[in-house]
Image 1 (spheres, one colour):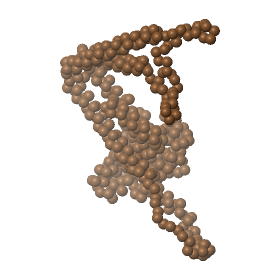
Image 2 (cartoon, one colour):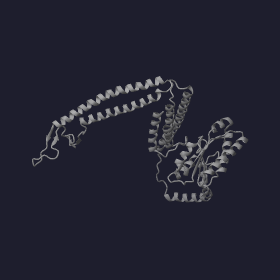
Image 3 (cartoon, rainbow, N blue to C red):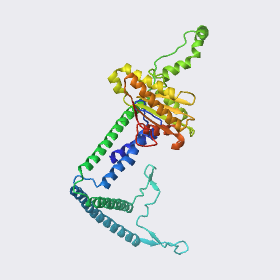
Length: 435
């Protein structure tokens, strides 16, 4: 798991450097979000699972485990014996080379017949530090400055590094042997099942996150392909009629249509806003509008009383399959009606549909107590409404308060909120509401 997570996070780091602003419309994740998720699993959950195994001395077969690590130490000992032989051989060659350097040194005499501070000059490699020389065509050829002595040192460093790494691995194996020497021959069935369940849960979480990563990466590749498409045209324009005629026609046409279109132009912004940035089911700002709202504020700090709330209808697809599309749309409209009555949209409160049953709320000048009270009110009203309508809503939510999190940039605050959606048993994080 650790090797897999390391490989994925390194790959995601490259993606973040290439395009840190890209966010998938299908998954709702950016590469930075995915990198944070994978790093959290690697740094926290994998380490916690490993510590539980060590502290609990959990093993299916202690003797087999100890034998495996002893065999590893034997292999490391054999490897280090061979490496130590190579190291000593290289050191012997280096010593002989140094002796030769001394034997082939000659005294240096200046113009006055005196020897300066360093009386010996080496004659073994007199041209190794020349800048270069010219070939027959007069082209300059630099001299290879790597001498045999340099290569010996490089080989020595590589062998010595391998030797030290083997010593570190040997100490780690000894630590595992010490931990499990006093462990029972076989751990309890309950302890093994508990660890296996945690491993399976963690593997499932990694696989699910990998699926999201692959889908996000596929959309990113499509996005890159679209960026490289160039429109080609074979249309040619030649002068056939005087420009004055076209000018008169344009004036007449626009003069006739101008009056009729004046009223429409006054509402064109509303038309664009509705058709391009409004979800047709619940009449909330759609995902494109949510991205626009975030992009307009991501480069400047937000105030300490800024709060981000995320709602997610976790069972929307199941309810659509169970009750039908019309009943599912009715459920969405009821839910939107409730949250917009509690978090009334205004110039300081933004409520938007982020797609896939996820709703974003950004509010300024709202206290933490007000947010908690509003979430409680949403849960109560939604429970009554669902009881009347006969449907079931698995509502998950989370929130993050800028001052409390010491996070003053909207994307980072949104990322914290999304991680908290549906979390439980943490007093700082709201619990899942099921109605």
